Amino acid sequence: MSESRKDAERRGRRAESLAALWLRLKGYRIVARRFRGRTGELDLIARRGSRIAIIEVKARPSVTLALEAITAHQRRRIERAAEEWLARQHSGAFSLRFDVIAIVPGRLPTHIMDAWRPSA
Image (tube, rainbow, N blue to C red; front, side):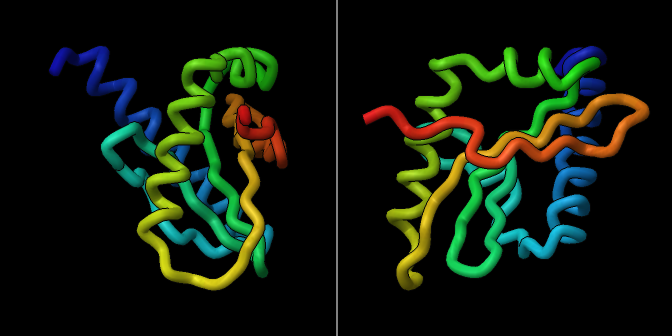
C-alpha cells in the first residue's frame, strides 16, 4: 500500500472515530463499524430507539464537497450493503435511514439526517 493510501486510510479511520463519538453524544448506540459485506462497506451503523441509521462518513474541506463525494453509484452500493447487513439481523421492527456525517477541519461534525432515500 502506498504512503498516500495509508495516510488516506488513517484520515478515514480518524474521521469515523470522530463521527462515532459525535453520534454517541447525540444518544445513538454504535451497532457496527466498517461492516464489510459482499456488496460493499458501511462506515457506521447506529441505533437510537427504533431507528437504524446507516452513516456514510466523509472528511472533506467543506460540507458541500463531502456531499458531492457521494455519487449515485456509491449510494446504490451502500444501499446494497445495508440490505445485506439487515438480512443478517434478527431484531424486531425498526425504521432505516441513510445519513451522512461531514468532517470538516476546524468545525464540529455536521450530521445530515436522511441524506438520501433508497432507489426503488
